[in-house]
Image (cartoon, rainbow, N blue to C red; front, side, top):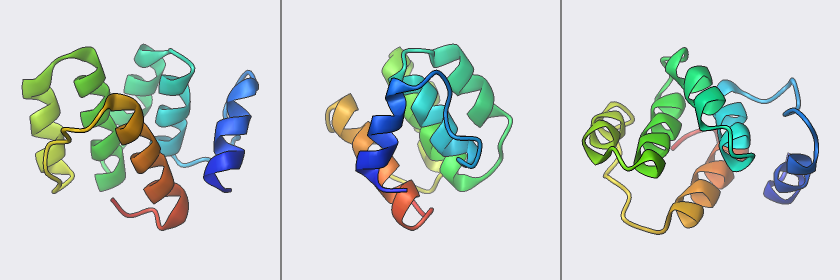
Length: 99
């Protein structure tokens, strides 16, 4: 799935069932359902899920918790705009599934 297709899928009521948990979390975040997104990535121990988890806590404004999850993902704390980070994560997960 391309980033354009992923964004277009946001017009639907639910993410494609074939999406990985981190991508499903990003999908729900984009739809404004932070709680559902958080539940999905919290139950996944993959590095990619930690990256999305970090983004979610950054969105929430809990930078201490976000920093913890960036460390779990072995990534630096993001400093760019939230929407830019969301798109960067989605692009990376759709392209290579590696942060």
